[in-house]
Amino acid sequence: MPPRTTDSTPERRDDDRAPSTGPEPETAGEREDGGAGSEPGPDQRVAALRRAADGGRRWRSLHVAGCAVLLAVAVTGGAVALGGGQDGGTGVHAVSAAGTLSPGDLARGDLDAGIASLQKHLRTQPRDFGGWSTLGVAYVEQARTKGDPSRYPQAERALRRSLDLEPGNDQALAGQAALAAARHDFPGALSHADRALKQNPYNERALCTRIDALVELGRYDDAAKAADTADDRRPGVPVFTRYAYVHELRGDVRTARSVLERALGSASAPADVAYVATALGQLAWNQGEYKTALGHYARALAADDAYLPALEGRARAQAASGDRAAAVTGLEQVVARFPLPGPLVALGELYEDRGADGDRAKAGDQYALVDAWTALARAGGANTDLETALAAADHGDKKEALRSARAEWDRRRSVHTADALAWALHVNGRDEEALPYARRATATGYRNAVFLYHRGVIERATGDERAARTHLKAALDLNPGFSPLGAREARTALKDLEGNR
Image (tube, rainbow, N blue to C red):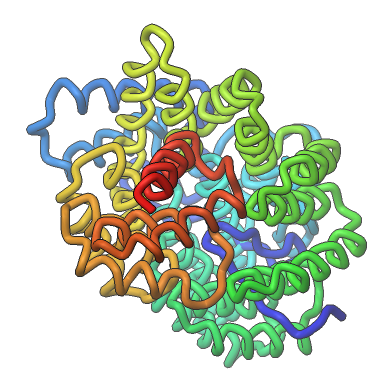
């Protein structure tokens, strides 16, 4: 058992061994048996998203809600089908006699085949409430790993069907908690998790989602207590990684690393190895330890050479190490498969920093794709205000960035939302108002170079040059390659401040 710690991040995976869930109810254009059509491949989804982004640039006056609906249709290939592909390989065996996914199927690369098998099972056993709940969770995972938020409404209907068949069953309630967290509805996630735990105090998915929700709401002390409870009841990789993250948020990197190393030592499934090794890589990258980070990402990719977070992390570490060509190639490969906001912005900034012919236009294309993904996510019922605020503040509509940041701050008071609001206020010229939020973002001791950079820039704008030097230097000392553009601007600002002494 690791030292008492807690951790939860928005995108952290639930344990593969958690109870699975199944297909969805009949809706217009969908058959209850899940046999309508097949899911488009990554190339089709990306092409559709890029077409939608191009359209958004040509017709800026088109209403966002209308765009989102069109995007949802485009990315799903016009089919509101229940999953993709034919049964094949291990997917044929992914459904047990009880109609649930085999342990680890959701994360071993068998997700599509497992969904197809569940659909096949539910065509013959439509009253299997466990199967319906398993499919709901599988859709949540599919949305996350494939960047396809159109799966969220499908997950919602599947989970509702499970509860219609067996009211109050903890598997479906825990699935609803996971879905709410994926949509960034963290109060809802907490409520559903609490309901699930009343039915089954040992439900691993609910225990972990409860930690995640409390962290994202900024309730760090409560999250620590929730992680202690989870460790007592269901110790394992998911709880250990949550321990580590909460320690990292408090600046206790040593404990975070120790816990993750123990988790990696206990991991046996390739999916768990890839997951924990990537978390270690991210932790090392945050501390500017690029060689160490690359080693962890290499281990993750040795376990799963298609693991997207490791591919993205490796590219960021390559960029920070000075290997920009490899970083660009790597991120191009990532966004070609799944155009998500984080890697899209990172790739756009690498293009801007490179500055070759056509790179500014290429960068603009990446930022436009962020807008397109955001519209699609909203159509799927997800809250995207934090992503919008972060991307728009530097690469979009600054007024929209501030609106989104304020809206997110009203929902939750985490260090990440404090930083986003501080920066959105800054780019709108409201630095005196921004400073308290920048201070709050760094108040827990979380060692994040972006937060320190933002605080330093805001302090400089308010006339506190001494504090600005302290925090800009701290950002560059901690992680000198934290951002292709931000790090360059931090160095320029620090040089100017040093010249004024």
